[in-house]
Length: 315
Ligand code: URA
Image 1 (tube, rainbow, N blue to C red):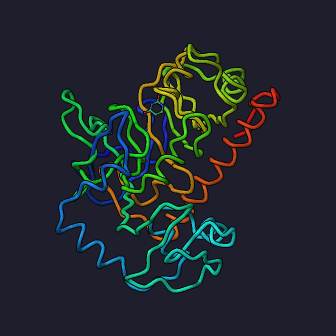
Image 2: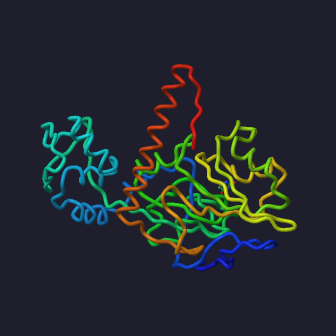
Image 3: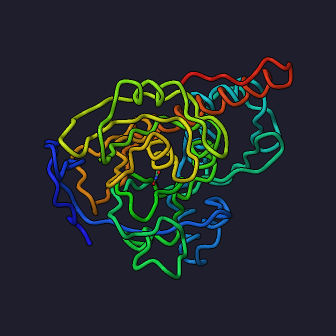
């Protein structure tokens, strides 16, 4: 239900509120095997045709490629300049070349086609499942947004967690952002029971031993300490299941309320819990860059692994 949030920004000892307010309506679910790229091809015929007409206006080659989900404008410029793109079977190295409705474009020999890509930022309410199907959930994230069932969530939030989650049909971007090892920065605000010591903050910063391994370095800050509970802000680059709750529980600080306030370059400013909005072109570009940065970190880390140099990556 839109506008579900009742808490205010100012955290105060007991019922320490976690978020800000102010927005519109929202919705939808997720599933481990969800693939944004697969699902988005399954729209009905009319929709596909009208999308094609809408996107097959003359476009510069680099824009055409970005709209096909190949990468950010900067990345698509590079691909063209590297000679990996052909137009009608001929290598094209000029990114500003105009592509008309009848031109056939390929990247590394694979045909690419722009789609009407959608990017929706939702401030998920409590009680809504971010999976695409959940027989136990009262509501699904995808149902908070019009035509949300053609979109896929980028990662997950627990049913009890509120906060930012992206819905998109851009599989390339989603996969980059969701990389399990080194994802984009995500900032959470948690209300925990107990007293948060300096040692606990330091442990969060250096890494906590969980059953699935030590956590990567995180940023941790005490926002407010009350008599029985506290508010902690944590920024992580990983996305393990229930990670924040498990990290804090390992320190004897059970989470009572958890909210994701930032996702990469995006914040919940002006978007109340239950609200959603389409991302601007600039925000999508900033996310693409964040995704490409993730990919670079993963590649460099994998190269280090291959050389036996370890995997330490600073957030
Ligand atoms: N960490 C958690 O514990 N839960 C979430 O929903 C997200 C991060």
